Image (tube, rainbow, N blue to C red; front, side, top):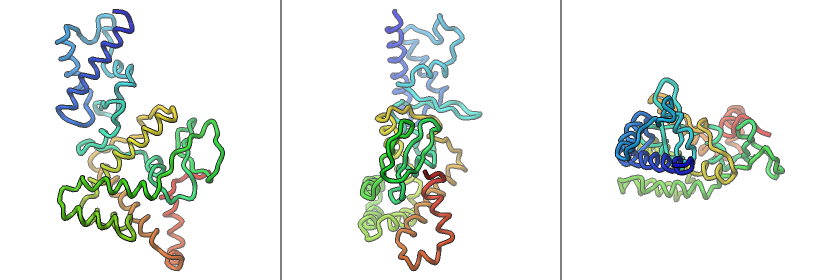
Length: 277
């Protein structure tokens, strides 16, 4: 087989192995498990890994050769995790939760910020710039979330709530005069915080990858941070409480805001990000 044919063969087997592994258990696939499935498929095709031409080739190094097929998530002291390159939402399965890097999370969800979010290619970080700021080669504009887009995301979440009575209460919250605050309160009252966090994270991850693809930016492993059980719980709580603070503040009138002027400055730094340009 020529080089092109060999590459097509490995790509085909890798895609099939990943599909089989995901069919058995949806979510990020541990590298060791994918290696077993991959080996079984090769055996059925009378092939072996590593190939005779590269006897010292490591499986993870092999996976790194196919970034259009798989993404390899490295974890300190643990086996790697593998997902299809076009399925970032799998990082937010119920068992293996990841967190979207906070500055990116804010950039794709904060529709109240007075400045617009941009991504600085060189530094690989979010920068908030004045509305109407001119395009620059090293800056890529991030599409702003809108009030309607955030409401629609909450409406789309409703089918995830199996209990019809609970669903009705959450739906009523979305239809209220203060939908974001009431939704957040309803989710907390019904103990849906984790389910909402995972659903929202999957949606934002897809939005993030779609934007990156359109902007010609290769998505980075650092955008998604693996969480252990303890950190995962704290992350859900922190982001949920930030939502709650934001919704409470949005409903305050001028006289009320005057009474919280000092802490408000700190809250705004948290909600809008540390860097503003």
